[in-house]
Length: 310
Image (cartoon, rainbow, N blue to C red; front, side, top):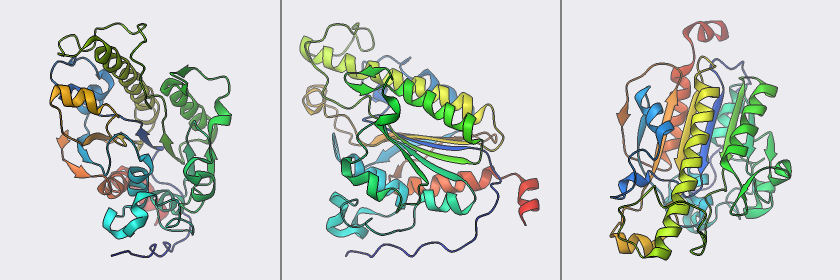
């Protein structure tokens, strides 16, 4: 059954009591080491975050290879797919046509400036009209990346990470940034030979598929480097900072996955806060990332700050 958009949260803006908040939706990302034969050294920043205390695990998402907006809206709204009815296939077309509750709106009520960064055409999926309804104060699109490095035609993850670092330097820690990356969006041409075959030497793939897979994995290393840059900025530099990173869906590599007999449709997620915690694995559904991120932000609020705000 279809549920109407939830009522907006009530409450007055308050002064933030934790550090900067950054949540990254990484295009076509998953821990590719789940595929036998992929280098175990593929994701050093991911492993570093886990070692320092993180919640991580498999993320059940509603699609494979496309339909980014379905995972995106689930994380921002916290709504399950069945609650959207037919709007689940594109919640930005009609469901989010009016202001509704979201992670961004909840952070705004806590006093954070809310910013969405997406290095692509702002009109795609109608984000230029919808994101304000979700509580974002500002939407930074591809026009802010005119001179940025590109990979396979898309703005690189490293360029996006640097832009986020620059935003935090300008706006300060009272900022929530939701990032939607583009670098690892397919297709990955099978004719390119500029990527060394080294990240997955032991895959039993035809040469053309091997080249495609290596290109994909090379972009995964860039996503991991982005995670490392943001960890150093959000977690290492600020008390009470929270960083989240997840894949919207698996890449559109169905032929390769079929050859490799890999059929797990889940992506991966990781959440880390500057407050020390134990590493724990918890497999969740994509809409549950909403409350999980919010809970971690609440835990990151310092006792002293909570006392002052009270």
